[in-house]
Amino acid sequence: MDPRAVVELLQTAAAAATVTRLIYLNLARQFPALVAYLVFLAAVDMDLGLLSPVSGFYFWNYVVLECLKWVFSIFAIRELFALTFHRYPGIRTVGRWAMYSGVVLALGISLLVTRFFWSGGVRGRSVTLFYFEVSQRSVVFTLAFVIVTILLCLSKYPLHLSANTLFSCIFFSVLFLSEAFRLLLDSLAPRLFNPHVDWGQAGFVSICLLGWAAILKRETEPAPARMPLSTPREDYLLQQLTALNQMMTRSARR
Image (cartoon, rainbow, N blue to C red; front, side, top):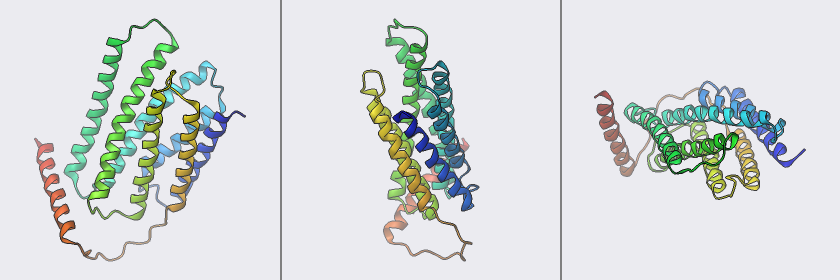
């Protein structure tokens, strides 16, 4: 078995382990989009790991499944955004539509620019693959920007998330940003891919998935609500967040 198939199947097993752990701890209902993303990721990796990369069936499987993966990624990131700002509906709404608009705008501009400047000269699969790779980078880099925004908010504001929510946000963010970094490195390669970079990133993803599965904990029944102690700086940051939420709520209603 070649190294490509090994890393694909290893990633399949790691994603399946994380899904199993989420279901076992009764967390699947709390993170339905994340579970769907991981299930799809496991299915894609298994499919591509068992097929021959030189076959036409592999090529069209890769293109179609990766496009579907964008959709699952968008819903997973939307869920993370909602979990992060569950107390701030205005920020959730504006952030969700900003993400949709950013993906469509980045995808449209990249395809138009590519069509305008590319002289062509080749036909068939090469054309499809070239446009697909450009589109993939536009979508992934836009979603990576959204994820970086979430991580910055988690690091700055005292959002008081549950441990499982915080761990899931961080681990998924690291996984997705590693994908964006892989695509960036692949863009520097002559044929837009570097097998050693791809294998290394797949191994890193497998380790992160297993770490994610190991760190999750069963959530107990919620304790009686207590007023958390806060510092003046935390109060100031929360006031900022509340003011931003009110402003975005008014903007969303217009």
